[in-house]
Length: 108
Image 1 (cartoon, rainbow, N blue to C red):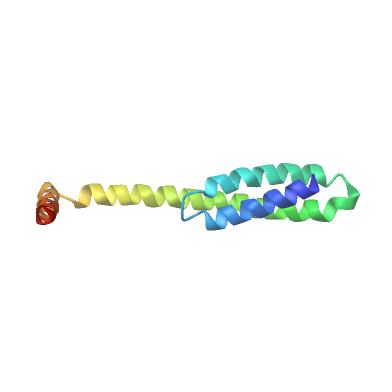
Image 2: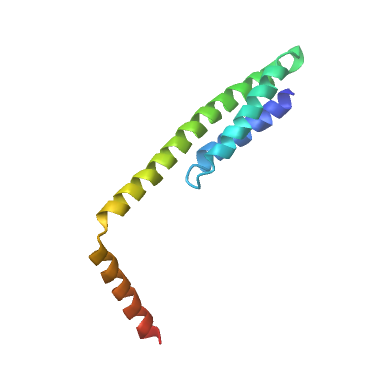
């Protein structure tokens, strides 16, 4: 169980930190939860207590970072949708549509 906790902790930490840009931090959080469970179970074995503790610590850090990154991503998407919906008027949309259609006409 200690090795599983360590592996889940490493995977969770990598996915939580690197996957934040691709909105995959929630996957790291799931791996972090598994790592916490395996780490808690692995600490019962005195021979592998160090590996279990390392996996537990990394999993807790990854779970915390994954939750924070997911909340920030959702807030950014919501903020962008709110700004984008109110910032563009109907005339702006029609001028963008006219500009895009003129580009397409040039290709024909």
